[in-house]
Image 1 (cartoon, helix red, strand yellow):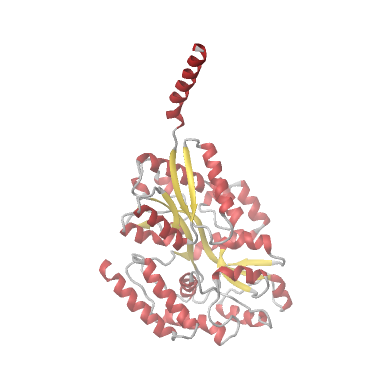
Image 2 (tube, helix red, strand yellow):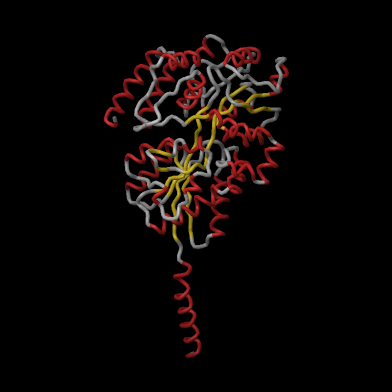
Length: 418
């Protein structure tokens, strides 16, 4: 009996001695799922691989809907004292997160290397750097691309390898492609209407905001002309449905042949590739005055209320998820971009893009890309613009009146920051 007790005590002692070595740093990461397909399993796989390599770190990923849902849930958790160390949120949330003093710049985290910060595509960092500091690291990033049905192009007598390169060609081809049950083009105007509108405005030669997040140009004549053009695609040219086009169902509408062309996130690329029953192509967006697309998608942010140990663990996770090999695998699995030039030098992504060239379109478009629309009071300013776009497209207001109201509201919201 005595020897059994001794053995038990020895075992307990051994466990007690081992416990500190097995102690884990726990990370809670909020992540936006519901932006371009069922990504939960992909992210779960990445987290599992990370934990296998880093058994001293435990990651709980909380999937929280779209980008707006994720911001609300993450900030609510912080406000109520629930632990959260990092999140993938909108790249355009940076101004608001800085203003609320919720995130830490990466230069202030011990051990973060400037060369690593400089390793990402500059166009993807445009929304990340504010007043000389880096506040976000790109991960789930995109540009808007044009998907088109090559079979429908052939049936309409159009060259399936020559999608529209200009607005005029888009209208002309759209008319040739529009028939009884099929529209030539659909551009979504719910979900993220400001994003699509920014692309059109850029192509018409005008930015919607200043680089410092303090000024908007919604009532500029070129911007008004842009919204008039968008509306004319349905009311004048008849190549797009009147009213609004749903973001969330547009991919399925394209797959079902309801539209021959659609503008959407490159984050839909793998889902379209896996589900299209027809030959399809992907192209850069057409130009008017110039070509261009805003970047889009999510960045990693590290919350300020974190310990040094938690920040170090968060950096290990971020560096793992954005490493070239992992970024390449992510791009192949989803359609989102590899966030660094090094990702496209990996054997995996070189082989994939050689076999499937559409996977390069969003990356190539970075040459003409600009920062996604972002200001102080981003959510409220953006809502005003979204409402103006939808009011014009549904005929509730003229484009000029709707944009004038949005501009007045933006001026009021931004006045205190100037």
